[in-house]
Figure 1 (cartoon, rainbow over the protein chains, first blue to last red):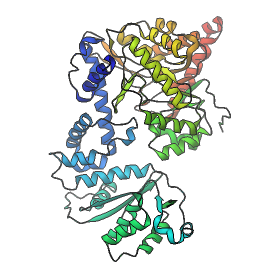
Figure 2 (figure 1 turned 135 degrees about the vertical axis):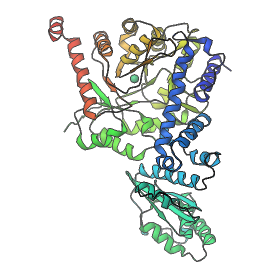
Figure 3 (figure 1 turned 90 degrees about the horizontal axis):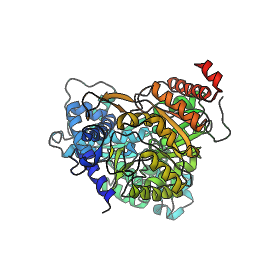
Figure 4 (figure 1 turned 30 degrees about the vertical axis):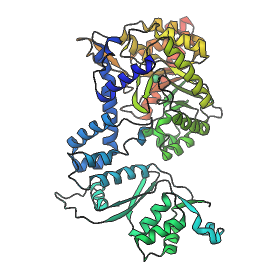
Length: 255
Length: 292
Ligand SMILES: [Fe+2]
C-alpha cells in the first residue's frame, strides 16, 4: 500500500475512533505536543456529526432523553462514519442502531418512531411534481397491469405494531401528557410532504401494501396481487383511482 | 431589482447558506455574487429549487467540501457525478475545493485533513485535479487550508507545493487569506511572506472568514486559532487582505460564515467592507494615506 494511503488510514482511525494514531504522532509537527492538534479534527468529526443526528432526530431525543441520545449518537458516529459527503443523507441507519442498543432496545417502538421521524425529515425537503391523471393510463389498454407508476418524491411508507403516529403528534403539537401508555396497535402509515410541509396518514392495510409496492417500483399487476394477499376484500381499481386522484403519481413506467 | 445578465463574479460576495435562501429569493438583496456548497443541495430538492431561482438573479460560485482531491484511496466518482449534474444546471462562475483530504475508502470524515507536502502528494494531486476538472468539465480552483498540524517529513512548504502544483497542472488557486493568518499563527510562519510567495497570476478567488481563539492544548499557555467561520473577520485578516489585494489586484472575494450564522445584512455589511478595503488598497498612495 502506498505510504500516503497508510498515513491516511491511521489518521482516519484517530479521527473516527479516537485511537492513538500509533506511528503517526512522531510524524506530526505543530506546537510542543502535536497529538493535541490532531484531537481538534477528532473533536470536530464527533461534534459536527452528533449535532447533525440530534438535529435530525429531535423528536427521538424528546422520547428517550438527551443523555441517552448523546451517548447513542457518539457511539453511532464512531462506528458508522458517513458514506458520502452529503450530510443530509447521514443517519438513515440510526433508528436500527437505536433498536439494537442495550440502553434503548427495551423501548419497543423506538425504531419505528425514529424511522417515522427520518421519513418526515425527507418529506420536508421534497418537492411535489405535477401529477398524472387517469387519462394517462387509458393509452395502455390491456397492458395496464404491466406498467409501473413513479410516485411523488416525498412519499414513504412505514408499517408498525405501535401507534407511533399518535406519539409523533403529541411531540409536534407539544401536547404530551405527564404519562402516556402506548398500546400495541398495527398502523400502516403514508408519509408525504413538499416544500417544508409534512403529513402522515394512516391507511388500511391493503391500500398501504398497494401504494408501497408501486413506490418500490413494482408494476400495477404485482402491486394489485400483493395488496389482495394482504386484504382480499380490497377493490384494487378503487385503490388505483384514489392514488391518482390524490395526485400521488407523477409519471408512468412503460412495460 | 438586482439582476445580473452575465455569469461573472466581481467584488465581494457572500456564502449562501440554507437559513438565508428563502430570504434571498424573496427579497433579492444587493449581493454581488453568492457561493454555495453543493453538498448542502444535492440531497435537498426544495433548497435546489430555491437555488435555481436565486441563480436567475446572481452569479453563483460552487465551492465543494467533499471532493477530497487529496485522498490516497481515490476520488469519490459518484459524488463527482452528482456535483457535475448540479453544476450543469447552475452554470456557475467558479468551481473550487480544498488542498486537503476528507474521504478514506468510502468513509467521509466531514473535515478537511492536511496533507504532507512531498513528491508523492504532488503526483496524486496532479492526477486527481485532472480527473476532477475532466469530470466537472470546468476549471477547479484549489484552496489553501487552515492548519493545526503538519508533517515533519514534508519536503516543501505549502507555498512551494502550491506553486509546483500550478506549474504542473496549470490550475488556479483560491487564496483563503484568513486561512493563511490562522495557519501562520498555528504553524509559526510569516503570513505576509506566504502571500508574497504565491504565484500572483494563478489567484482566481479570495476567501475571508472568521476564526475563534482557543487555548492551544499542544502548547500550554499559548493560543490556537481555529477556522470556525463563526464570527466576524478579524482585523489582522483585513490587514493581510489589503496586502493580498495590492499583490494580486481586485480578485473576487467571498465572505465565509458557516456556523452561528448571523442575519444576512451582517454578511452583506462584511462584503461591503471588503469592497472598501479593495478600493483603499488599490488607491494611489496619497489617497490611501488620506483614507487612513
Ligand atoms: Fe475558505
